[in-house]
Amino acid sequence: MRKNFDTFEYVDDLGNDLVRDFEKAGKTTHPHSVGEGREKSAIKRGILFIVILAVFLVTSSVGMEYYVVHQLQGEVAGRNRPFAALTVEPKDTLDMLVAGDSESYNSVSTMRLWEDKGIAAYDCGQGAQRIPETYYMLKQGFKGQSPKIVMLETNTLFRDIGAVKSTQAILEQMGQYYLPVFRYHNLWKTAVDEPEIHTNYKGFVIRDDVEPYEGKPDYMKKKKKCETMPKYVKIYLEKIEELCEKNDAQLLLVSMPSPKNWNHKRHAEMQEYADKRGIAYLDLNEKVEELGLNWDEDTQDKGDHLNVYGAEKVTSYLGNYLEENYELEDHRNDPAYEAWNQLAEQYEQNLAKLRGK
Image (cartoon, rainbow, N blue to C red; front, side, top):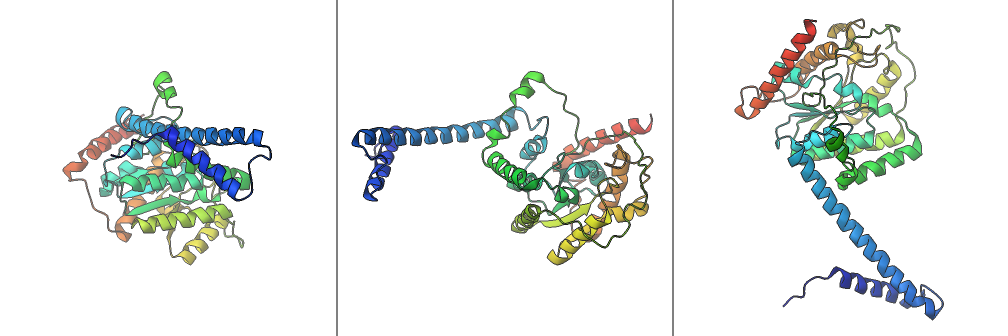
């Protein structure tokens, strides 16, 4: 009959094995026999601590994810909202994931895409999203979804935070992905403070503020030089390419209109990279007139981000572009997507109220 597994006995045996290995190699952990026992005991305690810590982190992570999905239904305030929300989306219902920094979630109206084309898209953007966050956000998305397209907004690719901070960001995101307890460790604040969670439409939030752009209209004037992407960004961009390829998704790079953030130097770098790698690239900063954008009305913060009126124009164009260049199913008459129709109706009602001000 098989003996029941005993963690403490296992750790004790493991500690003895390690000490014997040291002795065989002629490298005793302490030159004096009096200290050998103490050293052995310290090794065993260290191993035991690591085992207990690992078990605690894993079980806490499982419990935390269960709480986020089944108790909060993905309704998490703050930076981790898109991670949590993606977890509760019904399996294999999304056609497209939109990733990037605040330029992405302020520019792509998921409900406009839905109403015009029946495309089920989710905007996973975060404010000042760094490329390691983008990568692990997409890994999270691919866990339960099989999107045909990943639309990556390019402003995040020029976020140079230096070698130390980039390494810190990589380790942080890796830890949070594999051990979600680190991502959701402060969820108790949600339960205690009950912060207001704005209604979001598959990642898009209506923002109707208007602050005109007063800068130069020719912000895309051609320059000879490129603005180089940081090395660690290129490494992660290639990892995102591989991730998309592995999951049979096409990567689409898009530069959203933003006279405050974008210029021809960045455009040139992206175009060169996309051409070299064979990736589709669309720079909407070169199509301001075609989009019908008015910088007196369509920006919420002086040319940094679009408001909902600008996002409506951009998304209408994107819907046509996607329809012409990709094969995406129209789900509007699919009973399984009835919740999308209801959410779109709510979106239109709120939009009508704003326009009627």
